[in-house]
Image 1 (spheres, helix red, strand yellow):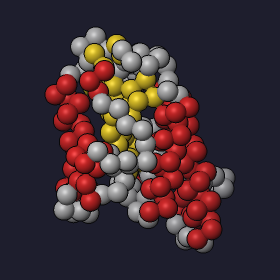
Image 2 (cartoon, helix red, strand yellow):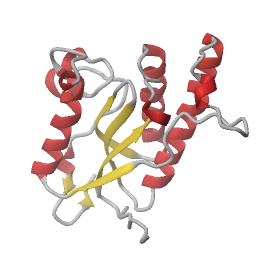
Image 3 (cartoon, rainbow, N blue to C red):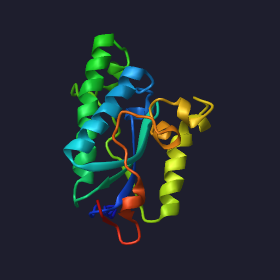
Length: 184
């Protein structure tokens, strides 16, 4: 089977999705969602990444990310999942959560996330708007809130009300989507 080719050039915008192991609802509590958002914020600063939008759902995460330099997406995603997994495991251990037994394999390794992540390149303004609207409406379409701004774990409040969402946000206007170059 041919490997999926990844494109991670300077200025590309990526719509990424990753899921909890076995699609379990590990992010349904505030403390867990806070961990994922906090690590997103930390890593955006560390890797000089641009967060265009995000949502943390009970069993998966969506984000639109951009990088000023090539080659950072896979490292960023690996680190985001790794840091979050360590902290989520500690949280579940402190709570004495029975779900840990379902996340632990025969070797005693705990799996918080599905192994891979999904990456979709965004080359047009229309596609960026579509993905931002999709991720902001995800909690509404799932019946978790009546409006996107009611969901505390997304960038919707920043877009609609200009409020802080725990991550430094960037608009995509600085990204030249047609040739995938970024001008800061």
